Image (tube, helix red, strand yellow):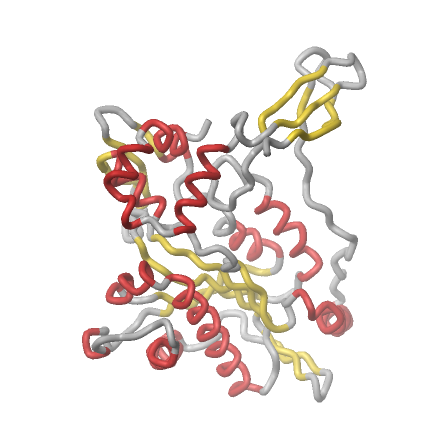
Length: 353
């Protein structure tokens, strides 16, 4: 049982009384899913061991993307799919961050604001690449809404493959191993385009742009070569806001959890009243339909033929072994028979209507 879900079950009525008027429809859907997860309300799966004929029934998971009891295998599934997209190049992590002054807008109009973040960040990177050599780049973007203390802090982590492809010349332009783009220049364009996008959007508005800081933050750093870079990014994918291992105490109507200080890298603790802790986590529920991980350029899902062409070029340039392009399938749930230790098979599912 997840510690967070256990706390949510114990304090659900109190939480509704305290924060009910601040909950979005998407937050309520997430709460309902988590409260039903692995209970009789969700239904059950039927398992059979063909070795000793032992049978069992297990309550179903809710499958909600914010449920800490679900999606455990999603990160490994994503990493497996990315194997076919690997290139023998250096990869960089570019982080686009929204300033503190826009957090109120992130709470009230999250879907519109986050969509704008994706489109603006993508346009900035593509334009910087075009100005350099006119080629097309590939990158993967992940939305994060929290900082290390789990406060609302929207930002995008973007893994960029160093190098670009010129379609007209069918030519690969090798990128530098220690430099991608100037972070200060990226930040200036990021600020200007985000303010413009907010002012142009029908559902977004800024009462006074003068209250925004003149300098925004964009970080750009090298994170690895080939597969290790994807493994680095996979740590940011599909994980819960706060894993159970970091919750160290839930007594005296408070919750104490660990977090790592970004400056000193030292482990610190934060103590919050239980209801405030529940709200801290639930404010990060994303709007329904908002895709949190997106691929662009030659890493996009529809660019398979282009990506294979690039891989063939690099195969000849660097005598590189092309990754296997075998079809990938999601990992399946496995149960071990408690009687004979053989693998059990799921033979049926009964859902509660």
